[in-house]
Image 1 (spheres, rainbow, N blue to C red):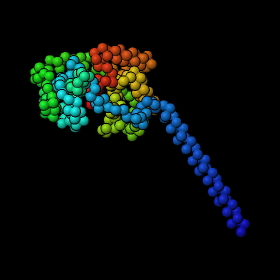
Image 2 (spheres, rainbow, N blue to C red):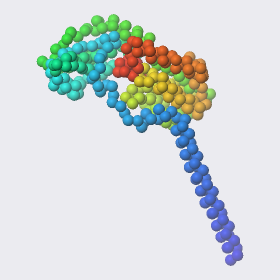
Image 3 (tube, rainbow, N blue to C red):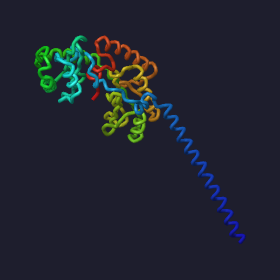
Length: 320
């Protein structure tokens, strides 16, 4: 009996010790998890995290109230007789909205507040950062114009004839040259001494608001579902490239700062260098130089009618 009592006491003490140790370990694990989450929220850019939970704004493509720009767009204008015909056109599903890689736009405004007549413009960009308008895109555009004219019928008057492809090529070339000179894509790389673990990297990119659209290719969309940043591996598995599109942002300098905070956060975790497009390390001084260049580019864009964040800038400077 004495032996049994001794054994029972021993096991009771051992069980109590095990339960106590398990409880302490559980508390420590939970505390460590909460501390880690707190650090992640502190370090990860609040701006990018907010993109996942923020309310989606209405898309600029949903509004028809804008003026096409003859410097960058091929435009065909209609005079629409009667407000009802215009409302029917704008509320109906369009036969085409895309012309290969370019979008066709429909805009309208009243010519005279004393009448119900209005002007409708159908437009397509003459060029974007990938090239001039192609003949195929031009024919898509003409088909759309004809569909609009057919839908409006007798309620529409074409203000001028539809230009032929050869006529718009010169304007397209000029627009393409100007767009290239104002291209606003910033390129950076994260360089690690070791191969970057994709699963761990994927987790960090998700926290920054990036979506993996293809294996090891990540895209950050803004609230209007336009590509703000694209990130993917280069030919080497220890270099990850980031492209930032400052021209589609309403506030390019601040948005760049927030995105670069995300780069620093990832670089710190994976022990990476942040390099610019010339493979020079980005330090505090070079970062300030980049911010200054962004402000200069914003001024240049505005002078040429390509206001950062506007419909036209989103179209001509978009990432694919």
